[in-house]
Image (tube, rainbow, N blue to C red; front, side, top):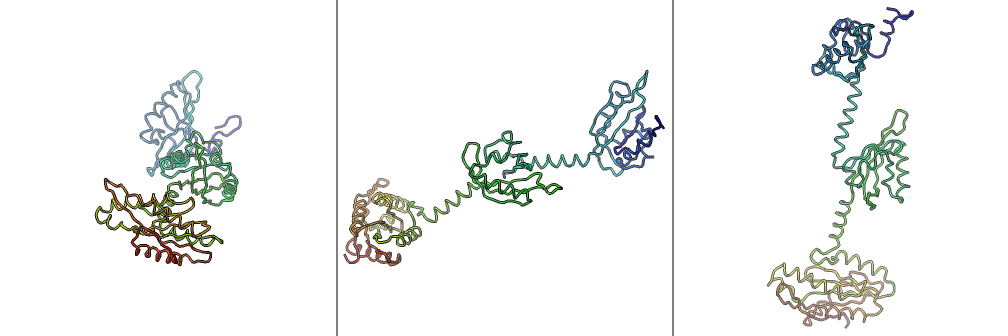
Length: 413
Protein backbone atom coordinates (compact mmCIF):
# COMPACT_ATOMS: atom_id res chain seq x y z
CA UNK A 1 0.00 0.00 0.00
CA UNK A 2 1.46 3.33 -1.18
CA UNK A 3 0.44 6.97 -0.93
CA UNK A 4 2.37 9.54 -2.95
CA UNK A 5 5.18 7.06 -3.31
CA UNK A 6 5.34 6.30 0.42
CA UNK A 7 5.06 2.68 1.52
CA UNK A 8 2.48 3.01 4.31
CA UNK A 9 2.99 -0.57 5.44
CA UNK A 10 6.71 0.10 5.93
CA UNK A 11 5.90 3.25 7.90
CA UNK A 12 3.49 1.29 10.07
CA UNK A 13 6.07 -1.40 10.79
CA UNK A 14 8.82 1.08 11.63
CA UNK A 15 6.72 2.98 14.21
CA UNK A 16 8.15 2.55 17.77
CA UNK A 17 4.66 2.35 19.30
CA UNK A 18 2.18 -0.44 18.76
CA UNK A 19 -0.21 0.43 15.91
CA UNK A 20 -3.19 -1.45 14.54
CA UNK A 21 -6.28 -0.94 12.41
CA UNK A 22 -9.66 -2.33 13.49
CA UNK A 23 -12.59 -2.99 11.13
CA UNK A 24 -16.30 -2.65 11.99
CA UNK A 25 -16.40 -6.28 13.15
CA UNK A 26 -13.92 -5.36 15.90
CA UNK A 27 -11.04 -7.34 14.35
CA UNK A 28 -7.48 -6.30 13.57
CA UNK A 29 -6.98 -5.92 9.81
CA UNK A 30 -3.50 -4.46 10.21
CA UNK A 31 -0.93 -4.58 13.06
CA UNK A 32 2.71 -3.69 13.31
CA UNK A 33 5.41 -5.74 15.01
CA UNK A 34 5.58 -3.35 18.01
CA UNK A 35 1.92 -4.02 18.84
CA UNK A 36 2.34 -7.79 18.48
CA UNK A 37 5.43 -7.74 20.73
CA UNK A 38 3.56 -5.76 23.39
CA UNK A 39 0.86 -8.41 23.36
CA UNK A 40 3.42 -11.21 23.60
CA UNK A 41 2.15 -12.86 20.43
CA UNK A 42 3.31 -13.18 16.82
CA UNK A 43 1.72 -10.73 14.41
CA UNK A 44 0.03 -13.60 12.55
CA UNK A 45 -1.89 -14.50 15.71
CA UNK A 46 -3.03 -10.93 16.31
CA UNK A 47 -4.00 -10.16 12.72
CA UNK A 48 -7.63 -11.06 12.13
CA UNK A 49 -8.33 -11.62 15.84
CA UNK A 50 -11.03 -9.75 17.75
CA UNK A 51 -9.44 -6.88 19.65
CA UNK A 52 -11.73 -7.33 22.68
CA UNK A 53 -10.42 -10.87 23.15
CA UNK A 54 -7.03 -9.51 24.22
CA UNK A 55 -8.45 -7.22 26.90
CA UNK A 56 -8.91 -8.11 30.53
CA UNK A 57 -12.50 -9.37 31.04
CA UNK A 58 -13.31 -6.40 33.28
CA UNK A 59 -12.36 -3.97 30.50
CA UNK A 60 -14.32 -5.50 27.59
CA UNK A 61 -17.79 -4.05 28.13
CA UNK A 62 -16.57 -0.44 28.23
CA UNK A 63 -14.27 -1.02 25.25
CA UNK A 64 -17.08 -2.58 23.18
CA UNK A 65 -19.35 0.39 23.90
CA UNK A 66 -16.64 2.83 22.81
CA UNK A 67 -15.97 0.93 19.56
CA UNK A 68 -19.69 0.82 18.75
CA UNK A 69 -19.92 4.59 19.21
CA UNK A 70 -16.88 5.24 17.02
CA UNK A 71 -18.19 3.07 14.17
CA UNK A 72 -21.59 4.72 14.55
CA UNK A 73 -19.88 8.08 14.01
CA UNK A 74 -20.85 9.51 17.40
CA UNK A 75 -17.42 9.27 19.05
CA UNK A 76 -14.32 10.48 17.17
CA UNK A 77 -11.82 8.81 19.44
CA UNK A 78 -10.80 7.76 22.94
CA UNK A 79 -7.84 7.73 25.25
CA UNK A 80 -7.79 4.84 27.74
CA UNK A 81 -5.58 3.17 30.24
CA UNK A 82 -6.65 -0.44 29.96
CA UNK A 83 -5.47 -3.89 31.01
CA UNK A 84 -4.87 -6.64 28.52
CA UNK A 85 -3.71 -10.24 28.88
CA UNK A 86 -0.64 -11.95 27.50
CA UNK A 87 -0.67 -15.69 26.67
CA UNK A 88 0.99 -16.43 30.02
CA UNK A 89 -1.99 -14.88 31.78
CA UNK A 90 0.00 -11.90 33.04
CA UNK A 91 -1.81 -8.56 33.15
CA UNK A 92 -0.28 -5.63 31.28
CA UNK A 93 -1.33 -2.01 31.52
CA UNK A 94 -1.42 -0.07 28.27
CA UNK A 95 -2.29 3.45 27.21
CA UNK A 96 -4.63 3.01 24.24
CA UNK A 97 -5.41 5.92 21.92
CA UNK A 98 -8.06 5.26 19.28
CA UNK A 99 -9.33 7.41 16.43
CA UNK A 100 -12.14 6.73 13.97
CA UNK A 101 -11.13 7.03 10.27
CA UNK A 102 -13.78 9.20 8.56
CA UNK A 103 -15.60 7.75 5.54
CA UNK A 104 -17.15 10.16 3.05
CA UNK A 105 -20.90 9.80 2.95
CA UNK A 106 -21.12 7.17 5.67
CA UNK A 107 -19.97 5.92 9.04
CA UNK A 108 -16.27 5.20 9.70
CA UNK A 109 -14.98 2.00 8.17
CA UNK A 110 -11.90 1.69 10.40
CA UNK A 111 -10.50 2.66 13.79
CA UNK A 112 -6.81 3.25 14.27
CA UNK A 113 -5.37 2.09 17.61
CA UNK A 114 -2.11 3.16 19.19
CA UNK A 115 -0.82 1.07 22.11
CA UNK A 116 1.90 2.00 24.61
CA UNK A 117 2.90 -0.40 27.38
CA UNK A 118 2.79 1.59 30.64
CA UNK A 119 3.16 -1.32 33.06
CA UNK A 120 6.50 -0.04 34.39
CA UNK A 121 5.12 3.48 34.68
CA UNK A 122 2.08 2.21 36.59
CA UNK A 123 4.26 0.07 38.84
CA UNK A 124 6.40 3.07 39.74
CA UNK A 125 3.31 5.23 40.38
CA UNK A 126 1.71 2.53 42.54
CA UNK A 127 4.96 2.04 44.46
CA UNK A 128 5.17 5.79 45.04
CA UNK A 129 1.58 5.90 46.25
CA UNK A 130 2.19 2.93 48.52
CA UNK A 131 5.37 4.52 49.86
CA UNK A 132 3.59 7.84 50.37
CA UNK A 133 0.77 6.06 52.18
CA UNK A 134 3.22 4.22 54.42
CA UNK A 135 5.26 7.35 55.08
CA UNK A 136 2.14 9.36 55.92
CA UNK A 137 1.29 7.10 58.88
CA UNK A 138 4.82 6.50 60.19
CA UNK A 139 5.32 7.56 63.79
CA UNK A 140 8.68 9.06 62.77
CA UNK A 141 8.68 12.41 60.98
CA UNK A 142 9.67 11.97 57.32
CA UNK A 143 10.48 14.85 54.98
CA UNK A 144 11.73 14.68 51.40
CA UNK A 145 13.08 17.58 49.39
CA UNK A 146 14.64 18.01 45.97
CA UNK A 147 18.14 19.03 44.97
CA UNK A 148 17.25 22.69 45.48
CA UNK A 149 16.06 21.97 49.03
CA UNK A 150 12.36 22.43 48.20
CA UNK A 151 10.03 20.21 50.23
CA UNK A 152 8.30 17.46 48.21
CA UNK A 153 6.68 15.36 50.93
CA UNK A 154 5.83 16.08 54.56
CA UNK A 155 4.08 13.42 56.63
CA UNK A 156 1.67 13.73 59.54
CA UNK A 157 4.40 13.09 62.13
CA UNK A 158 6.41 16.02 60.70
CA UNK A 159 3.30 18.16 61.13
CA UNK A 160 3.00 17.01 64.75
CA UNK A 161 6.70 17.60 65.41
CA UNK A 162 7.14 21.07 63.88
CA UNK A 163 3.59 22.40 63.66
CA UNK A 164 3.72 23.07 59.90
CA UNK A 165 1.15 21.31 57.71
CA UNK A 166 2.03 19.86 54.31
CA UNK A 167 0.13 22.75 52.69
CA UNK A 168 2.41 25.21 54.55
CA UNK A 169 5.68 23.72 53.35
CA UNK A 170 5.27 21.82 50.05
CA UNK A 171 7.27 23.56 47.35
CA UNK A 172 8.99 25.82 49.86
CA UNK A 173 12.61 25.58 51.11
CA UNK A 174 13.19 23.23 54.02
CA UNK A 175 15.43 25.98 55.40
CA UNK A 176 12.25 27.76 56.54
CA UNK A 177 12.39 25.32 59.49
CA UNK A 178 15.99 26.24 60.33
CA UNK A 179 16.60 29.09 62.82
CA UNK A 180 19.01 31.87 61.87
CA UNK A 181 21.71 30.55 64.19
CA UNK A 182 21.50 27.13 62.51
CA UNK A 183 21.82 28.29 58.89
CA UNK A 184 25.60 27.83 58.67
CA UNK A 185 25.27 24.21 59.82
CA UNK A 186 22.34 23.74 57.42
CA UNK A 187 24.42 24.92 54.45
CA UNK A 188 27.26 22.63 55.50
CA UNK A 189 25.15 19.48 55.61
CA UNK A 190 23.37 20.40 52.36
CA UNK A 191 26.80 20.54 50.74
CA UNK A 192 27.57 17.07 52.11
CA UNK A 193 24.29 15.74 50.72
CA UNK A 194 25.18 17.09 47.29
CA UNK A 195 28.45 15.17 47.53
CA UNK A 196 26.43 12.00 48.13
CA UNK A 197 27.06 11.68 51.88
CA UNK A 198 24.42 10.51 54.32
CA UNK A 199 24.21 13.09 57.12
CA UNK A 200 23.39 12.26 60.74
CA UNK A 201 23.26 15.28 63.01
CA UNK A 202 21.50 16.82 66.00
CA UNK A 203 19.74 20.05 65.08
CA UNK A 204 17.42 22.62 66.61
CA UNK A 205 14.54 23.19 64.18
CA UNK A 206 12.01 25.97 64.24
CA UNK A 207 8.44 25.12 65.25
CA UNK A 208 5.67 27.05 63.54
CA UNK A 209 4.87 28.69 66.90
CA UNK A 210 8.40 30.07 67.14
CA UNK A 211 10.09 27.80 69.68
CA UNK A 212 12.96 25.42 68.95
CA UNK A 213 12.57 21.64 68.75
CA UNK A 214 15.57 19.40 69.47
CA UNK A 215 15.84 16.73 66.80
CA UNK A 216 18.23 14.13 65.47
CA UNK A 217 17.97 13.73 61.72
CA UNK A 218 19.25 11.20 59.21
CA UNK A 219 19.29 12.60 55.67
CA UNK A 220 19.99 10.26 52.76
CA UNK A 221 20.50 11.71 49.25
CA UNK A 222 19.30 10.13 46.00
CA UNK A 223 21.73 10.82 43.17
CA UNK A 224 20.90 11.01 39.48
CA UNK A 225 22.90 9.47 36.64
CA UNK A 226 25.05 12.60 36.54
CA UNK A 227 26.01 12.19 40.21
CA UNK A 228 23.92 15.14 41.35
CA UNK A 229 21.42 14.97 44.18
CA UNK A 230 17.89 14.85 42.79
CA UNK A 231 16.12 14.27 46.08
CA UNK A 232 16.71 13.53 49.73
CA UNK A 233 14.80 11.62 52.40
CA UNK A 234 15.17 12.99 55.90
CA UNK A 235 14.03 11.18 59.06
CA UNK A 236 13.53 13.47 62.05
CA UNK A 237 13.61 12.04 65.56
CA UNK A 238 12.24 14.11 68.43
CA UNK A 239 14.93 14.40 71.12
CA UNK A 240 12.80 16.34 73.60
CA UNK A 241 11.45 13.32 75.45
CA UNK A 242 14.88 11.69 75.48
CA UNK A 243 16.45 14.85 76.86
CA UNK A 244 13.73 15.23 79.48
CA UNK A 245 14.38 11.61 80.46
CA UNK A 246 18.12 12.30 80.72
CA UNK A 247 17.43 15.37 82.82
CA UNK A 248 15.21 13.31 85.12
CA UNK A 249 17.93 10.68 85.44
CA UNK A 250 20.50 13.37 86.18
CA UNK A 251 18.17 14.88 88.76
CA UNK A 252 17.62 11.49 90.38
CA UNK A 253 21.36 10.91 90.43
CA UNK A 254 21.92 14.13 92.39
CA UNK A 255 18.72 14.53 94.41
CA UNK A 256 17.29 12.77 97.42
CA UNK A 257 13.88 11.38 96.36
CA UNK A 258 12.23 12.03 99.75
CA UNK A 259 13.24 15.62 100.49
CA UNK A 260 14.27 16.85 97.03
CA UNK A 261 17.54 18.08 98.53
CA UNK A 262 20.94 17.35 97.00
CA UNK A 263 22.02 13.83 97.92
CA UNK A 264 25.34 12.63 99.37
CA UNK A 265 26.97 12.20 95.95
CA UNK A 266 26.10 15.71 94.87
CA UNK A 267 27.20 17.16 98.21
CA UNK A 268 30.59 15.41 98.01
CA UNK A 269 31.13 16.75 94.48
CA UNK A 270 30.19 20.25 95.60
CA UNK A 271 32.43 20.06 98.67
CA UNK A 272 35.42 18.94 96.60
CA UNK A 273 34.79 21.71 94.08
CA UNK A 274 34.42 24.33 96.83
CA UNK A 275 37.58 23.28 98.66
CA UNK A 276 39.50 23.34 95.37
CA UNK A 277 38.59 26.95 94.56
CA UNK A 278 38.21 28.46 98.00
CA UNK A 279 41.45 30.40 97.97
CA UNK A 280 42.18 31.92 101.38
CA UNK A 281 38.61 31.76 102.72
CA UNK A 282 36.98 29.33 105.12
CA UNK A 283 34.83 26.35 104.13
CA UNK A 284 32.17 25.67 106.74
CA UNK A 285 30.95 22.08 107.07
CA UNK A 286 28.05 21.19 109.38
CA UNK A 287 27.09 17.58 109.99
CA UNK A 288 23.58 17.10 111.43
CA UNK A 289 21.88 14.11 113.06
CA UNK A 290 18.22 14.29 114.14
CA UNK A 291 17.89 13.30 117.79
CA UNK A 292 14.36 11.85 117.76
CA UNK A 293 13.76 10.62 114.23
CA UNK A 294 13.98 6.91 115.06
CA UNK A 295 11.16 7.08 117.61
CA UNK A 296 8.99 9.07 115.17
CA UNK A 297 9.53 6.43 112.50
CA UNK A 298 8.94 3.54 114.89
CA UNK A 299 5.79 5.00 116.47
CA UNK A 300 4.09 6.59 113.45
CA UNK A 301 5.40 4.73 110.39
CA UNK A 302 7.41 5.58 107.32
CA UNK A 303 4.85 7.90 105.72
CA UNK A 304 4.95 10.21 108.72
CA UNK A 305 8.73 9.71 108.87
CA UNK A 306 9.11 10.87 105.26
CA UNK A 307 6.94 13.94 105.88
CA UNK A 308 9.00 14.66 108.98
CA UNK A 309 12.20 14.61 106.89
CA UNK A 310 10.68 16.85 104.20
CA UNK A 311 9.64 19.51 106.71
CA UNK A 312 13.02 19.36 108.44
CA UNK A 313 14.78 19.77 105.08
CA UNK A 314 12.62 22.77 104.20
CA UNK A 315 13.33 24.44 107.58
CA UNK A 316 17.06 23.87 107.24
CA UNK A 317 17.08 25.29 103.73
CA UNK A 318 15.15 28.35 104.88
CA UNK A 319 17.71 29.06 107.62
CA UNK A 320 20.73 29.18 105.31
CA UNK A 321 22.40 32.14 103.68
CA UNK A 322 22.13 32.52 99.87
CA UNK A 323 24.77 30.31 98.27
CA UNK A 324 24.98 27.80 101.13
CA UNK A 325 23.77 24.22 100.57
CA UNK A 326 21.94 21.64 102.65
CA UNK A 327 21.82 18.00 101.59
CA UNK A 328 20.28 14.86 102.95
CA UNK A 329 23.27 12.72 103.76
CA UNK A 330 21.19 9.61 104.42
CA UNK A 331 18.75 8.26 107.01
CA UNK A 332 18.23 11.03 109.54
CA UNK A 333 21.52 12.80 108.75
CA UNK A 334 21.95 16.08 106.86
CA UNK A 335 25.05 18.00 105.82
CA UNK A 336 25.44 21.73 105.21
CA UNK A 337 28.14 23.49 103.20
CA UNK A 338 28.86 27.11 104.14
CA UNK A 339 30.76 28.93 101.41
CA UNK A 340 32.67 32.22 101.53
CA UNK A 341 32.88 32.47 105.31
CA UNK A 342 35.41 35.06 106.39
CA UNK A 343 35.79 33.70 109.94
CA UNK A 344 34.81 30.63 112.03
CA UNK A 345 32.22 32.76 113.82
CA UNK A 346 30.19 32.99 110.60
CA UNK A 347 30.04 29.19 110.45
CA UNK A 348 29.01 29.06 114.12
CA UNK A 349 26.25 31.61 113.41
CA UNK A 350 24.83 29.33 110.72
CA UNK A 351 24.79 26.44 113.24
CA UNK A 352 22.87 28.62 115.70
CA UNK A 353 20.26 29.48 113.04
CA UNK A 354 19.83 25.80 112.20
CA UNK A 355 19.21 24.94 115.86
CA UNK A 356 16.71 27.78 116.09
CA UNK A 357 14.90 26.59 112.94
CA UNK A 358 14.31 23.17 114.51
CA UNK A 359 13.32 24.39 117.98
CA UNK A 360 9.65 24.61 117.09
CA UNK A 361 7.74 21.32 117.09
CA UNK A 362 6.50 19.91 113.79
CA UNK A 363 2.72 19.62 113.23
CA UNK A 364 2.05 16.61 110.98
CA UNK A 365 -1.27 14.78 110.55
CA UNK A 366 -2.66 16.07 113.86
CA UNK A 367 0.63 15.08 115.52
CA UNK A 368 2.94 17.44 117.38
CA UNK A 369 6.50 16.16 117.07
CA UNK A 370 9.68 17.50 118.63
CA UNK A 371 12.77 17.44 116.47
CA UNK A 372 16.06 18.08 118.22
CA UNK A 373 19.34 17.94 116.31
CA UNK A 374 23.01 17.36 117.08
CA UNK A 375 25.40 19.34 114.86
CA UNK A 376 29.11 18.89 114.28
CA UNK A 377 30.80 22.06 113.04
CA UNK A 378 34.08 22.29 111.11
CA UNK A 379 35.79 25.39 109.73
CA UNK A 380 38.00 24.14 106.93
CA UNK A 381 41.11 25.89 105.67
CA UNK A 382 42.80 25.96 102.26
CA UNK A 383 44.59 22.68 101.65
CA UNK A 384 42.20 20.60 103.77
CA UNK A 385 41.05 17.41 102.11
CA UNK A 386 37.27 16.92 101.77
CA UNK A 387 37.34 13.47 103.38
CA UNK A 388 39.20 14.90 106.39
CA UNK A 389 36.57 17.63 106.82
CA UNK A 390 33.77 15.05 106.66
CA UNK A 391 35.48 12.86 109.25
CA UNK A 392 35.94 15.86 111.59
CA UNK A 393 32.30 16.91 111.11
CA UNK A 394 31.11 13.39 111.92
CA UNK A 395 33.24 13.24 115.05
CA UNK A 396 32.05 16.69 116.17
CA UNK A 397 28.44 15.65 115.65
CA UNK A 398 28.87 12.62 117.92
CA UNK A 399 30.47 14.91 120.47
CA UNK A 400 27.32 17.13 120.43
CA UNK A 401 25.10 14.03 120.75
CA UNK A 402 27.16 12.74 123.69
CA UNK A 403 26.51 16.01 125.47
CA UNK A 404 22.74 15.45 125.32
CA UNK A 405 21.97 16.59 121.78
CA UNK A 406 20.03 19.59 120.51
CA UNK A 407 23.28 21.61 120.33
CA UNK A 408 26.31 22.01 118.16
CA UNK A 409 29.93 21.17 118.91
CA UNK A 410 33.19 21.78 117.10
CA UNK A 411 36.56 20.06 117.53
CA UNK A 412 38.77 22.12 119.77
CA UNK A 413 35.82 24.13 121.12
